[in-house]
Image (cartoon, rainbow, N blue to C red; front, side, top):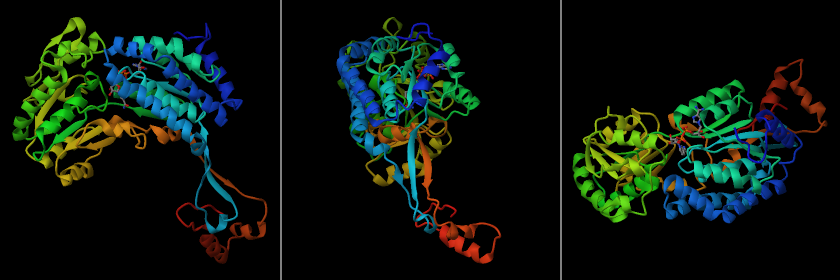
Length: 475
Ligand code: NAD
């Protein structure tokens, strides 16, 4: 296991050192937190080219996509946290009961302590920095475990990022499943994991041993319902853009389309011309299409190309891990492409006869991370929203909802637990401590709650406990 900048420190020693920093209160002042956030901002600015090259080498990610989905989102989160840090840190006053009118009742946002952040490979910069912003803004010490699979980004992060942060509150661990497994044997105060549901279970099991709270940002299959009342060209543009963005390797990508056979007939030519417009007649030579992260994922995806019937695309080349933007039709629910998260540039279309059948299809499966519904009728979109459940939802587009830091981002059920982005990140990485500060006065009045109990005292106490809104505290 490599500890950049830490020499041969053992894991335990390093965690101990971070714990001591935390116990000494070093990370608590707003100024210290702001300095770390500014460091993250400088890290992004100073190393833009290096980071962009790493993204290109790992995923052949077009600069346009890196800019939109990695740099700008991370930068925006840093600005937002810096702008609002003091407001977010403030104690939050809450309503009081009659019996606590003279007291101070508030929620204090306090850092958990030592936080572990585990990162996947598909947006290796965004999914490192965005949780890191929340954890540091909330005043925690952080151990970061980047993905070993996006190895160029892992190397840049390991070599450069620690220089921009206070070494007494931040450490990085490199490694794969085995090293992460060893790391998880240690006690953390919070674990923030982004990755697959399979590994999410491993993380949660390890966390349970220490009763460590977790956020699990997982994946799954995101349905995309396309109603008959749609403009096929617009739907094709939007679905194709979000399906093939980052070569389909996106946790919130529309995973499959549900539509009637009639809509499929209209959608296919529209998708064909959209794909040609986006990537040219030979997508392989397009600068706008990335590559599959590694051979293992390439082979998995190549296997999925055998499901149903290829309507568009279907070509692949192992030598540069290229898979053409593909649309599959006549797909059966039991085929592998409808069983596992696709995580590649393949879009199956499954036929349903009605909105009810689509909703039934969605609800028979695990709750997805995102759900999409396209219709010119707002009633139809509202029905899909009202009768299903998912981590997030977007009507008439792809994962635009993720771009809003004012919305919580996270899964539900099998797609995960917890939420982040913007203030939600700060809250996720803060313990919300319920506090009531009283004085030693008024003992005579407060003594109505003590034995010997009397019916009269009980009546008075019940009135005193009523809160204007909801919370109530014993006198
Ligand atoms: P993964 O679960 O294989 O790996 C994620 C992290 O866990 C990596 O850092 C890896 O080193 C570590 N890990 C792997 N195996 C482990 C083990 N046995 N024990 C302990 N740690 C282990 O996920 P991935 O392949 O890197 O990423 C793809 C998955 O992540 C997809 O399922 C995708 O949907 C999901 N994802 C979710 C979000 C989200 O925000 N919800 C974002 C991106 C990706």
